[in-house]
Length: 181
Image (cartoon, rainbow, N blue to C red; front, side, top):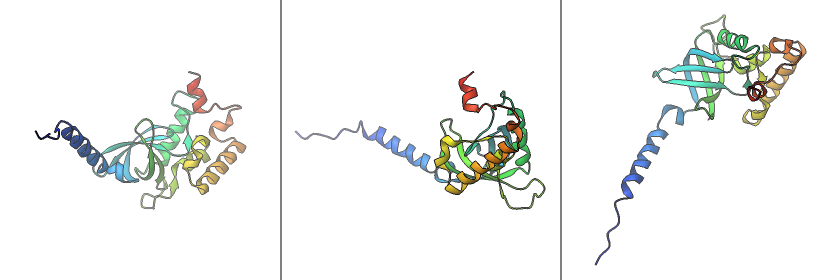
């Protein structure tokens, strides 16, 4: 009597492999750059983008943590970010997915007074410089050494000049604020 190999495992394995292949071909899975139109500024460190192929993607700004919307300076941080990206389209360099299925990106925008200029504004750095966000030290190693140096220096300058949230005597970091709620 000859034994037959079971087909019962072949179908689930084949289905799994097909699903993996489909995910590997998804635009954001294989690409680390998104160029898209800003649909909405969610808060001081999150944007909703629409790509040229009409996909919508939530994007968190790498290296910063802005006040939550209900937190002091939350509304101002959101409005400041909205002004920075007011020319509509941005370029996002996205090295990772965060725990909420957003992509975490370094976002570049055009200067607000020049719609035809290149995207030269590092939006996260501008949020820090304006006193609208903290440099997110917890994730510093996800940034290049140059970016770490720039982000840290801009936060120090914003603190010293009491810009934005640094005008408060003791601003509360968003992570601490969330824990206290």
